[in-house]
Structures are given as C-alpha cells and as structure tokens.
Length: 406
Length: 149
Ligand SMILES: Cc1ncc(COP(=O)(O)O)c(C=O)c1O
Image (cartoon, rainbow over all chains, first blue to last red; front, side, top):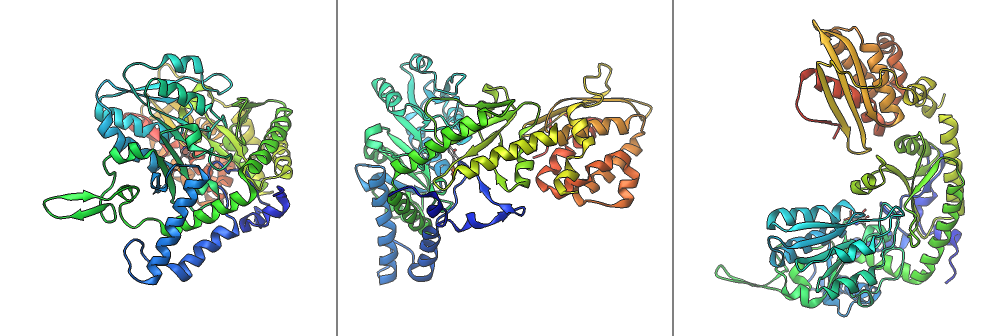
C-alpha cells in the first residue's frame, strides 16, 4: 500500500482538531501516539456487543470475548515472529513488563555480586527496576557508556562483561536520542558470554518490523499506546524456556491451575503471568492497531518516518544556534534539540501557542541529559501520520521563539 | 496583547537573559537549593539577614526565562524588606500567579505584577514560584533541597 499521508491522517479523528486556535501539529509520538478510528471502533464494539469476562464463562458471550482476546495473542505472536503464542504475555505496559522480569526472573536468578548490565541511554523504566533488584540482591549495576553521537560504545560494551554478568537490558531504540541500537550484534555478543538479554522495544516496535527470533532476544517489551493502540496495555515476550522456569509475578485468579489451602499449582504459560481479569478491551483494541499497521506495512511506515527524519534533520540543522542531541547514524523519527540561550520549557510554551505539541524536559532519561550536559531538551517525534507541513510548522514556530527572545 | 505576549513581556525576557543579583553571597545567613524535577530548573537562593531585615539577597542556577526572571525580580524587590514584609509579598505573589489578574494585588506588588500572565499557563506556575518557595524554605532554615514536586 502506498503511504498517502493525507489519506491516513483522516483515519485519526483527533488530528482534525485545532489547538489554541491553530491546526494541531502533533509531534509527541514518542510519548504516545494518536489512535485510528478502527481502534476506537474496536473498543466501542467490544463494550457494546462482546463484553464478558474471559476464560471462565460457559456462555456464548464469554466464549466470543475469549476468542477475540486470544486471537490477538496469536496476532502479536505472528507480528513479532515469536515461536509460540504462549510466549506473549499481556501486561499493563513496557514498564510492567520490565518490572515483571526484574521481579520474577531477577529474584530467582540474580545473587549478591552478580552484575546486571544496562546502557547510559535507558528510559527510567529500564533503570529503576534493575536498581531495586540490585538493592534487594546485592547485585551490581554496570552501565554501557554512549558516544557523543549518542551511539552505544561497543568497545566499552565488550569490555564490560565478566564472569559475574547475569543479565543485559537495553533499549532497541532510545526515546531521548532516537538511536536505533545494533541489537542483533549486541545480543550475539551477550549470548557468547551466556548472558540473557531483555530488549526494551517501546520506541522501536511502532516504527520498524520486529522479529524476535531473528534478534534472538530472550525478552522483548513494548507498549500498545505508543503503537496506535489503547493505553494501559503492553506485551512481554519471553522465550518459553525462560518463562516456564520463572515464578509468577502477581497471583490471584486465572494464573492458577488448582488451589487448596495445602497447595496451589500454577497455570501454564501464558496464564501464569496474567493474574486477574486482564485489559480485555485494550487487547482487542491493540489487535485493531496491529491490523492497521499491517495494512500499511511496517517497512512502509519505517520508510516514511525515515524520510521525515532526514527532512527535519536538514531543516532544523539550518536554524542558527540549534544543536541536535543524538546524531547517531541509525535513528527512529526522534529529534532532540536545544536552542542556545533559550530554555526548552520556554520553547515548549511558545510552540504550544502555535498549536504545536512537542515534549520538553528530560524525557524520563535524566542520565542522558547529564551525559550531554543539558538540563532538558525539546523533542519532536514522528508517527506514520506526520507530514512535511508538520515539520515546516515546527521550524516556523522555532523562528517565532527566536523573534520573541531576540 | 495575546496571552503569550503577556507571559513573555520584555521585562521577563530581559531579567531571564540578564538576571540581577546573580551569584553567591559569601556571608549569607541562609541559603537553599530549589529544584523542579520536571524541567530540571535548579536555583540556589542566598540571603543575608540582620535584625529581621533582608540586607542582601542573591541567587544562582539555571532555568527557564520565567523561573530566572521571577528569581531576579524577587531579589530586587525583597532587598531591605523585613521578614513580615517578605511573608506578605510571598502570599500576594502566590495568589497573583495562581489566580491571575487582580488590580489590588498588582498595585501592591509593583514590578512583580509583570508575572501575572503566568496564571494563564498552569504548566508554568511552578516555574514562577520556584524561587519563592526556595526562599521561604531558606529563611525557615529547612534542611535539604526544595522540590516543586
Ligand atoms: C524507551 C522506553 N522504555 C519504556 C517506556 C515505558 O513505557 P510505558 O510508560 O508505556 O510503560 C518508554 C515510555 O516512554 C520508553 O520510551
């Protein structure tokens, strides 16, 4: 399918509105994406016609809800090319997926003096769970440094391994810098040291084809809401050998096989990790989002966003006193920048006045801000519906910022 | 004047770029660091107080135009004020930037009234108030860093 942005934009009702009296220019897709009508319709249809609890009703309605829910599990499996649908666990988001691994895998496999490796470009959600695990177990956190371009320092990475390295977790793509990390190569190196790898795909999954078997990652986490789906839902993919050996994360209904006061046996995968009534509507809405992305094609989406990225990089670089933070060769459609002498917070307010939504701040990646010695940045991030006019509006907006501060 | 122009008036841009009383105060009797974790603004306020009067007040740090201008104007206005006066101005200022235009308050606050436009931008009220909360904590001699969160 041809990527006709003008046509695709019509699928997103929210984009038609004005902000501060101007046409909305939405450039905060790394924070969350807007939703196409088909996702909104799927949620409405579920609540209007199919709502029932799953995995327990003997009546038709529950069977229908269960089937729709489980169909999405298979859809996700195929979409990221997991070996089996049992390896797809529905959780609240990328954050919960990481916490699940840290708590369940971590508690059983990490001991005092062990080393957990992360990188200097992680989102707080891929830092803090590991810090807590270290505090609880006496393990040590090791941090892979990044270069001035915002790329992983691969030499330093290789040297960081020791016989005590027990787990590696890093971003497939960075939310603050846009860097796409050489995940496959890094995972191969980690595996040569027998170190399992969690890949944080929150910022990669919506923007490129993902194949977990090709990557050979042991865990992959993602959030639905950044990929045109509902909020409150994410996915943990894990290799079944690892997931099978892990204890439950939360406990309650659905995750058990049998319960007596003497002994409880746990359900099999994936239900062992889905305690309680899950976000059924969210899962079904996410299914619609995946169908939507599939219809366009992930290659096509990636291509479109890469074109926007190079156009925006060129245009922004031409603005005097503008410095782009994160100039890696391989990037998703994310541009972080600062303007000399003008604080990002002021830039955000002035752009907002022109209907332009960007993120300003530390992007939940304070260590990245420290690395580049800036208190904060402005970040524009693209989705499949952004177009060249959005970027022109951003550049015009920045000229207005400069006029005001002249 | 648009709400944005009201917010970024010349005086604010000027104080944001060229803050007055910027630097440390070696003989400060009180000092305190304030931090806004949302945007990374970090200001330290230094006060030297004698007989219940603010003899000298300075600040340093970095932040957006609103927080730096607010700190700069604060140091100008509070010089020579008694503790009781400082408290009264704090209350007036707080009310102005959270509730918006008010002729009585603006009259009492003098040049600080230039920050009245902040009330139209709820996300920016914390920027305007950071220096003030930090000052209050400094004069109360609380330990630790003040955070707007
Ligand atoms: C790289 C990265 N990892 C994890 C997360 C956390 O995602 P969520 O808040 O949806 O759980 C984000 C969200 O911004 C992110 O950018």
